[in-house]
Each structure stands twice: as C-alpha cells, then as structure tokens.
Length: 327
Image (cartoon, rainbow, N blue to C red; front, side):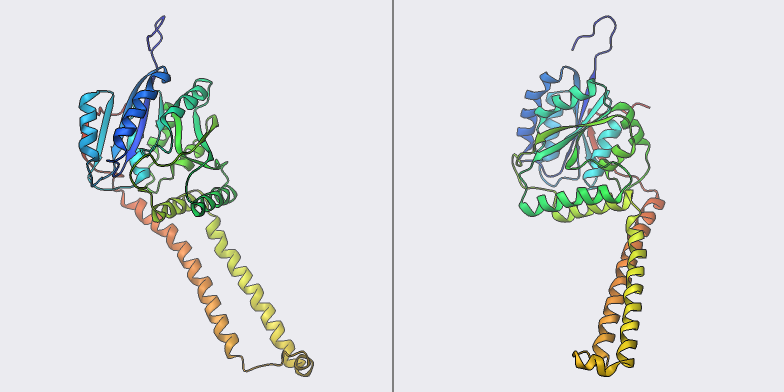
C-alpha cells in the first residue's frame, strides 16, 4: 500500500504456529497469498515450527526463499502451541499482529474482518466461533470450559473464542514483557485490557492432515487457563473441608440419636449396626477429599517451581528471514 502525504504504510504480522503440518502447508500458503491483497497493507508471515518431525521445516525454508515476506523459526524441540505463539509475537514487527493456526480451521479470509475492527480503533480483536466442526464431545467440553472459566475468574473472559485474534502493537509489547511460563494467551490478552471487541465466524474442518491438538494437550491448556487466572480452586479446597465437616457433624448427631432412641429407629428399619461400613465409607470419602486438596495445592506449587527455575521459554534451532524484534 502506498504512503500518501508522509503517512507511514501499515504493516501486518501474521503468526502461524506449526507442528507436523506437512500436509496442510501448501494449502495454507496458497490461501494466505490469495487473501493477502485484501488486507490493504504490507505484511509479514512468521511461521514457528514447534519441533516438527515431518517436512514442515524444509517446506517453510522453500517458501521463505521464494518470498521474503515469509519468515520462519524452528524450535530445538516441541515446546508447545502457546510457546510457539509467544515466539511469533516476540519477533513480530507489524503495527498489528494476527495469530492464526496452520490447520485452516481459522480462515485467512477472515483476517479482513479483524483488520476492519482494528482500524476502527480496537486494540484487541478476537474471533468468536459461531459454529465449529469438532466432535460432539469436544464441543460440549469446550462450551462448558469457557463458561466455567468465566465464572471462576474476575476477568471478562471471552466465550467460544480461541487463539485466532488480532493484537495491536501496544498489546503485543505488554505480552512480550510478561515473564510467566504457563501461558494461556486467551487470558493474557484479556488481562492486558485495552479496547476489545469480537467478530464472529464459522470454524471449518481441518484442511488436510490429522489434528495435532490432542485431548491431553487441550486438557493441559484448560488447566493452565484455570490455574493461571483464578484462585477459585484453592477456595474449593476450603469449601470441601467445610462441607465434609458439616456432613460429619450431621453424622454424629444421627448416630447419637440412633443410640438414644434405638427402639424408635428399629421400627423404621434404621436400627444401630456394627458401624464397619460407615467407617470404611467415611475413611474413603475423607481420603478422596484430602487427595483432591493436595492435587490442587500441587498444581499451584508445580507452577511456582517452573517459574522460579527461570529457564528460557524456547530454544531456537534455526531461523529464516528473522530480524531482531524492536525494543
């Protein structure tokens, strides 16, 4: 886009985390190149290879050599989707940065919708899914998680919104300065504040290849979201203790009444027994509650342990076309 009357042309950065995306990369490149002219701005595409074991990195190198607007990073091993996005944000140089997955479930054609809201003055524009093509169980779990997270955190967490979003350079600077390791970027962009809005789109099926985001990875991401932005699980341990104490007190009252009025209870079939089943049930119940509380404490302590080690978020094995990020 040409600059008029001394105006500096806009530059858009597109961050694409990739993990074993050999099958979908040619389609991704074609779709992005076809959609880019509608953006009305200069652009760069930053692909982050998160330790892929297929030909993802060689294909990215070929595209970077073919078009200098394409840049790429290669991790020394798999560090995770959120870390790959963080690395892309770290090296992005555009006035606006769009995060989009490589599987094309988030369509590059929808980037124009995000840019329109950014140019209207919003600094965070996230894409909200109207429909999604995932299995029924995954849709139900995702629906429940977003609403649970909204209830458990003081922040206005966006519902049904993934990582597909646009961030103004001011927001990216704030996120880059955050030192935490267990990163839930959907929460971080909300925590930053600024003017935020949503655009709706239909989420399609994966264009090619097999899904790389397994249930285990989705569950870990959900736990990162809950434990990084809410102390509610710690309060849950307190509530469980109060509930168990309340039930135990009622049990004591009931047992005492059985002893004092044994004949009356016997008439209704509740005569006092030996008490062995009651003891076993009580021990198992209390043991389960204690293990839940210890698990919750362990989640928070484990995150503290990861933070204090101070290791880098990622290690680069190679790069193509990347310049040092602006200060």
